[in-house]
Image (cartoon, rainbow, N blue to C red; front, side):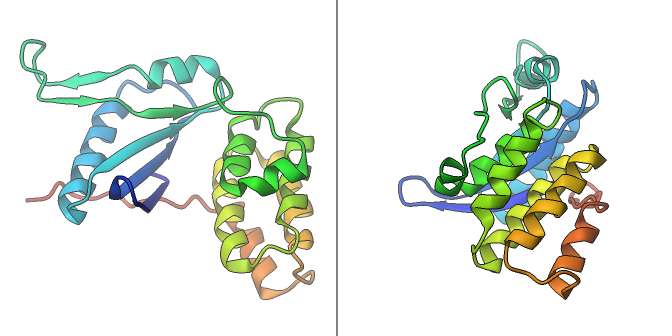
Length: 195
């Protein structure tokens, strides 16, 4: 898993959202996803959802298929990840639209990273982040950097545009820490199965 969020909803209560970036089809992944969601559910005693973030339609179609654990006549666990990809995410090139939902704009940038509009998308996100408090902007920048980590050109655009526009001085500790994020791949470390 790349990111784990705890979300609280007035309507549905608290739950975890595990986010996994998936670059290509991998037959071993559904079993790993089932393990991680079950592990997190057991550890935190909160319902756990899985979002798989992809950058192409083929991987999206593969990832969104339900996968049953157990024999066909007794599917003990059925995994149905929510998939975010270029097939269902908007292209946000207007800074005002990006400002309305910064998380959606970051997710849209990640899912459209391989498309020709990526420069306009990142420009809209960086402009939208201008003047946003660091406690809000930093996690969005980190999330976006993680999603663009395998596309170094996009990552360079992100830090060339986002960090300076958030009001940080060049070379400040915050900016240096953000620049290092482009090379980092955050995520849950491998866990042994609970005993």
